[in-house]
Image (cartoon, rainbow over all chains, first blue to last red; front, side, top):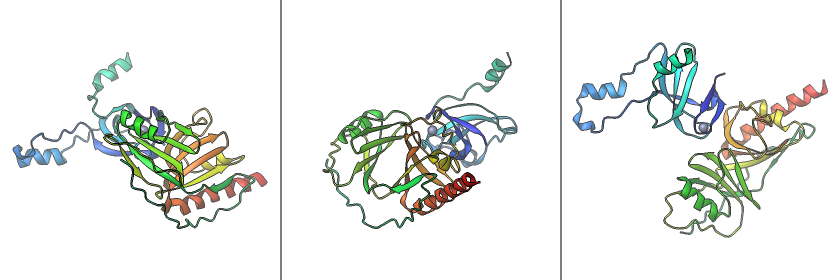
Length: 101
Length: 186
Ligand SMILES: [Zn+2]
């Protein structure tokens, strides 16, 4: 079982208390009626699905109830960090370089 | 604003509370009034104060007499009070919300020598005293159902569970306790 750090509870919690909610930092167009069908379809459906590090939304659904973001490796499930909803997407490459150093 | 008073139902939950006293004792708590309090900290301060309680800090409870408030999330508190007290005046103009949910939950007390082991059988959290000290409260899972767990003593817990889940929860706790009792006898 994975342990995931909830940035609101500030604790490592068992994975079963959480639910994955897909790719993070997908911004809804400010004016939906001014985007064309292609852009709207991209917003709704087009996702990166990378093999590697991935910023994604999680919800501590059986805990504090809050949505937050996590950077998780899609192959081996390592979690680099978790951070509160609304905080900017971290510079993953730089974090990894700093880890190596 | 004085809340509209909703009389909690008198329907029994129909729980069969078995005796597994050599491992732990499970009892249903008295029917109580409960509120879900939502809002930013300043609003929660006021809503808790209306109940005579301090706002609980992260993953903790505050208690005053027979009333208690549990931190469930950054903007969510579950408050409990003895049935039959005067109606609570939560005040006007608050940007928080107080919703009466007295019949949403059933309260269970689990206490005894191996209460922590009974819980650990199906609760994924670390229930050691270091990780889950006395006074801590957390929403979590027990087997397949969500519970609110409050540690009142080293071997004493209060569980709040959604009413319709209670028979399942009691069955799961009972099975865990019977397993532990059987292991003890070996
Ligand atoms: Zn949380």
